[in-house]
Length: 251
Image (cartoon, rainbow, N blue to C red; front, side, top):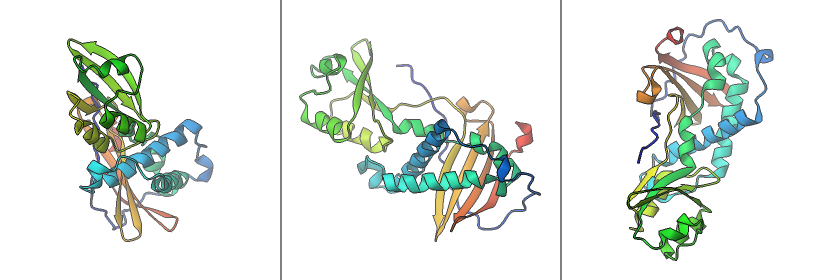
């Protein structure tokens, strides 16, 4: 099967608590553009991807917890909106790029791809649009997480399906559950080509450090150039604590 490739880095970093020298700020609140519904939806998915990044740091939750915590996602979502609404206080470059900094990887939280041998009689139900297979282990997963199944195509003696969730989930744990049924040939994330942008989180005491990572230049192959900002958030105070990578003027 020809796979769609997504290149994005989930960055794990040590928070930097030393202040950086910020140039004279030239923007103010009046320069902020109201966020559209679609952009706010992107921030919700960014928050879900942040939550996913926190879960997979736990060696147990990574493989056992499928559902993401909605309350935690909401908390991260509020953080990201707050940072955007105060982006003019952080740095000129951060303000200028703020609306472009989203995690394309969050789309992997909505579906996985699986393949089944055509000799598996139960797979005919999925081909015909019937979710129930009669295989208890499979049907339990589908029902427990309210998943949808779409038939993609047949290749030689293999059926390919996309399994979709209406809300973001930990796809690593979901894949593990399907692997444990021993009914599938391949189980893999559905991934995408895109930019190298990513938002990740590290915590230290009561401070949350959000790292906004931006890549450009042949990103389907890993991005040639990179730039990042680390924004500290505590008690509704935002502060740029680190910035680095290639100069944005090279973009």
